[in-house]
Every structure is written in C-alpha cells, then in structure tokens.
Length: 247
Image: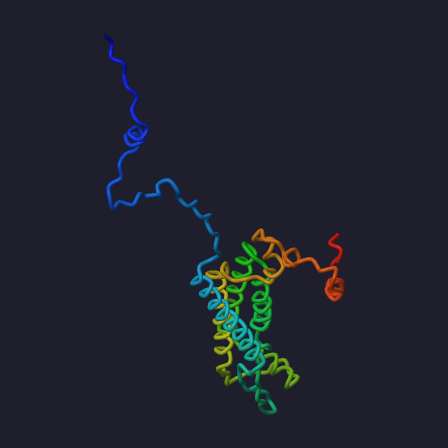
C-alpha cells in the first residue's frame, strides 16, 4: 500500500515559516527604513574670510584717504628756501610743493578717485583700479623726493627781482617733501591691500544685484499680495508703485 502524506496543522506551518527571534533582542529597523539624505546647503564665504575682508577694507579706506589728504596738505606747504642775490641786494625766497612739482597733488586726486572706483567695479576692473592706486603712491613718493627746488627758486627769484641774471644761494629744503612722500606711501599701502584682498570686498552694486546673483526671488516678489479686504494695504501697494490687483 502507498502511504498518503498527512497535511500539517496550520499552527505548525506558521511556526516553521517564521524564524524564531531570540528573547531580549530588538530587531534593527534602520536597515529597512533609512532617512533620505539631506540636500547640500550652499553657503557663502566663511565667516573668517568675510571678517578679514571687512578689516582689510576699513584699513585700505583709512590709509587711502589719509594718504591723499596728507599729500594734498603737504603740496601746499613750503618745501624750500633760498636767497636771490643781485647788484642792489638780496631777497629771501620760499617755494611751495605745488610750485616745485604738481605731480604729488595731481596723483593724490587720482588716488582718491581710484579708491572710490575700487568699490564701483569688480573682477578684472577692480584689479586694474587697484594697480592704478599702487602706481599713484609710487609716483607721489618719487616726485616728492627727486624733484629738486632749483628751477622753482630761480623762477621765484626772477619774479621777485625782475632780473633775468639773478643768482640763488642758500638753498634749503623743509620736511614737507618727506611728509608728502609719506602720504604717497600710505596710498601705496592702500593699493596693495586692494590688490591682495579686493576680491573679498563688497561692491556698490551688491544691494541691487544680490537677489539675481543668488537665484532667489526679489524682495518685491517675496512680499505678500495686499488683502483686498483691507483698504490700507491697497493704498500702501499703490504708494510703492505696485499693482494691488496682482496683474
């Protein structure tokens, strides 16, 4: 006779189909349910870089303005003394820095304009203007220390005596040429700071193009539409030049 298999009870089949879980063990559900990865957050420059940029910006402004002011002040002061000798006697002479050379005063004004232009441009333009600021400082130092007062004293002697054959003796210089050179050195230092750190400085146009540069909606777009049930909001929208209907 052939043996007929007997069906197992339902409870026994359920027991064998499921693996036993040891007592005191908590199943790990993290393998099956994982949190989705967070989207990367795009941040701006590090706080340390922004702080260093602000410090270098303030220092460059201080050096540039002080250097231009010192140079302009020194250019109007007496740079040299002398005495004009002629047949009837002698005349004391004094000449100012602007009479000896007009280069320091002119370059100081150019340096001030370049200092302002540094914040009006970006990229290559800012580097070019920063280099111009450096050159202004170098030019002021060179002109203040190398241009002698001889020709200016001779012109002053001719004007004082109305004689073409006047001899100038006793030439002496004051400290103002060195002060003008110090002003040029300050402008030079401001230009060097602009060259090295200018890329971290803000520009004048930041307040206008910040929203477009970051891809975020503008403040106007983020402002909620006025409530038609509140007439004061409609009037405020009209005052801002907006369409209160949302069109």
